[in-house]
Length: 275
Image (cartoon, rainbow, N blue to C red):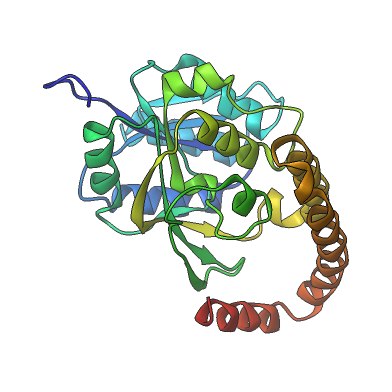
């Protein structure tokens, strides 16, 4: 338990670049919360409308701080936010375009940060299509398992994971050797030191269409590497079978999505009904 009377700060951090519409969708979700959100943006300082809007949000006190992105990539920008954070803060990385699951989500998660002895928290999420439709709900795992995460089965998305800043600093933040799956690696490394506290509710809405969607094949290669790093040798045969299955499946999916995205979304909705 934390020291009685000590109030910890739950900070939502959004990394954004050239995505004004995504930033506005996340802003709408932030503004709708029943409890005022402490929100930080990490964005490049340039002449874009995104940066100008970020400054407007800061000037109007919707955002508490704008951190200048140093142009080393998304995970490097997230690490910047970790570096400047107070160790007792709780950090929640929510991508531009993604949302908190309901108007009471921030208040709910804040309650758990004030009362848990765990150093990280995770919950479920809604999956949204690139066009903005909700496809289904991914429920919170009863317990976090590295094998499930790295085989993308009963997984936790980083939009539904919240970490104490000093824990992230001890972990060394996101491993920049991974361009797509550094969030999965971080959660697996975290789980080896702390099982995490599950919140058995969806706490974010994760929309497809971002870098993890567009770079599926690279993500597949990185997950193979992570399974080799984190799982036992007996898992290697299933790991390679899964890798080649995903290699073929991703290629087909990319083709079908480009020609009939509505059909793909319908299939995803049906799959969620049978989970």
